[in-house]
Image (cartoon, rainbow, N blue to C red; front, side, top):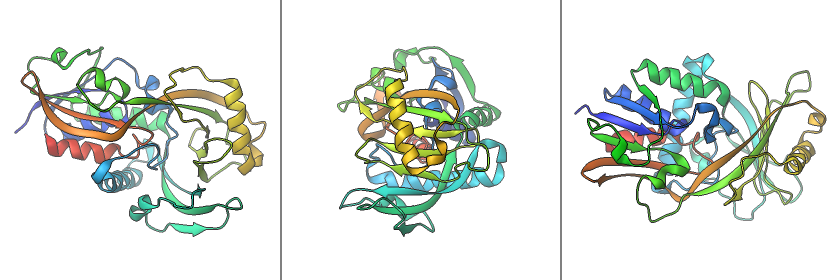
Length: 314
């Protein structure tokens, strides 16, 4: 049965959901009070990796689905901003979590990491969000999805004709529906620097548990993203100069050639972390509501898998 659907939220999760629902023939409207440039998704690195997230029993399914979709987009749409790059995950725990590698072909252990650590080398999607988000919105509009710029304070504010509401509003989601588990902000700061020239960085690196602080280096089409922070409960969206210097220093320990490079831009985003991602259906005042939020630092990584889960619920 074809339905009339309102999707609340226009970040990468909301857009992916709208794209899939429209592809299945549903009449979809996306409502958001932010342009894509101001969403948390726009600040994302963005690399396919399950950072700061628990997807529950369906994590592997969503990881695989999203990885496969990015492979398809990469092969068919060069203008989408999706590239596959080789890189390294530095492991600093005696009990490492490599479940994510079960869906990644060709990964290998590596010894080219700091003393006392282990590591994994893998090729995964790196997404240039300044390219990908406009591309995804255009692909969604091409499927007939309408966009409205407005704030929705409750599901009752969706159009009366809409049979279904999908909540994919990140941190704002629990203002729209009751939830026993909190969605907490996890502040992430990045600095983007020039990455042109013969000594450009072509591989990504993630050192999640670096004693000096979270460290990641992500080469995109338009810049080199350096990060970062994972400050639970912090909501200040102003970049901190001292934090930025620390980020650059940590990243330069791995890639010394980046010191002194021009800063292209800066960003701060608030990751919507929940103990476990919420993807379920319920009824609110007689209206069917599907929740899809709490992705932490893995909104991009689980976006298409989440959209598939929502489609099955519809």
